[in-house]
Length: 369
Image 1 (spheres, rainbow, N blue to C red):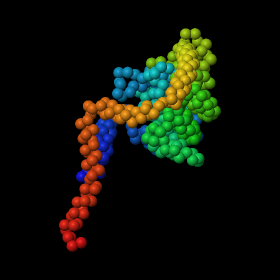
Image 2 (cartoon, rainbow, N blue to C red):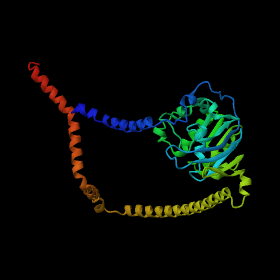
Image 3 (cartoon, rainbow, N blue to C red):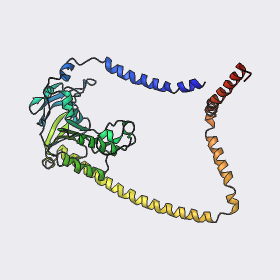
Image 4 (cartoon, helix red, strand yellow):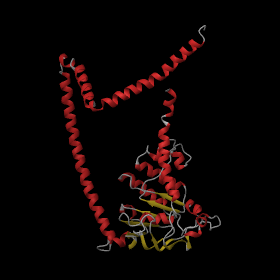
């Protein structure tokens, strides 16, 4: 009995491994893309990308995800991210902003068109060296179950364990760690995909100022839904249905009456005004609730001071009544509770029974002792 109690917990690990293996095997069994030569992608004799910081250009790029061949994501997309400048991509969800970053990172290969760095095809560069020169901060940062120090690799003592996928940290804390990791890397290219989406207004302002300083003299591509964070961008591209429909600076795009960018900014400004009104109303309501709570507590304390001895003696009865009420609420599960209690009793008695039986065996085998 005792031996089996040690074995049973490992069955959960086997079940989880089987579930994970199913996904892995499904990925392995998928057919390879005949248009992509893996040897060419990972070959070592390709051009070194060290000390390069040229323009990033998408020239008539088309792309379709293999799992959704009937829904093109990018349609003849053309844009340029100038070296040492900040380029912003905005648009509604599903317009292809994050796909552009995935293609630049070479997670996928474009269906047609070409992507170049300083006039050279991106396929001419070694993938590993390319990614070593790119810093990425995504909307949902991925952190390892190690300390903050190991996630960032600084020379200071940040020994707090962040938990699996950073579960011990808030969304804002995870994004700040991801930002720190990207900046410590000193990348040539910086890709920010909603890098401040999980921050509050105060933290966002502080982080945005740090981002503006860090993006100087660095080729940066920013994806943003909060348009206030990209007003200082050198070039803004508005995407819709996989194509560029507007481009320019914040000022020139705002000057276009009836433009997509202008309407997006106005909608966000109206939403922010409504949010501010809601915050003020909720603050007033919290203040009123606090005042009512203080008054009720004061009355309760004054009533408690006048409680007589008869009421004090009824406390054990009230506690007993609450316990009975809790038991009655779980009356439908009494069979499960009973089985659990019996199982706990047997598990707890396993070791004492083993000791007792061992003593009996020793006594029987050597009665002279």
